[in-house]
Image (cartoon, rainbow, N blue to C red; front, side):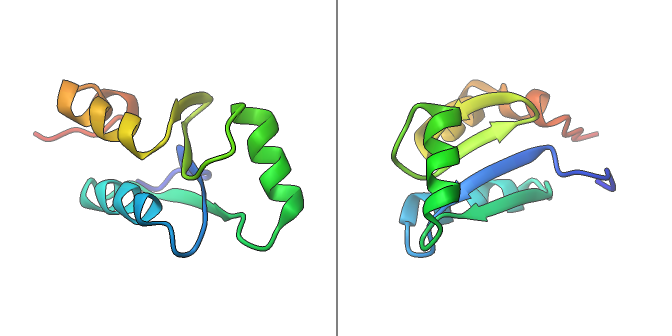
Amino acid sequence: MNEAMPIVTLYTTRFCPFCVRAKMLLDSKKVEYQEIAVDYDAEQRQTMQRLSGQRTVPQIWIRDQHVGGCDELYQLEREGALDTLLGVNHE
């Protein structure tokens, strides 16, 4: 995808296994994403909490839709809804 802005935004921490899993799924779909690390950035962590209402990582948005964390991302994949949200075409 060559859009000006990635359609996926993830708030992550460096050593979070759920963050790694979420990025692996997105990488497998060849989707570009913006990763915002909150490990050592209290301001970004506060922004994440304000936007999502959650304190845990990852927090994931597809376009303007907050989809939740890693479990919710994989649930969308199991339901067959993730590709539609991402605009991924498997033809």
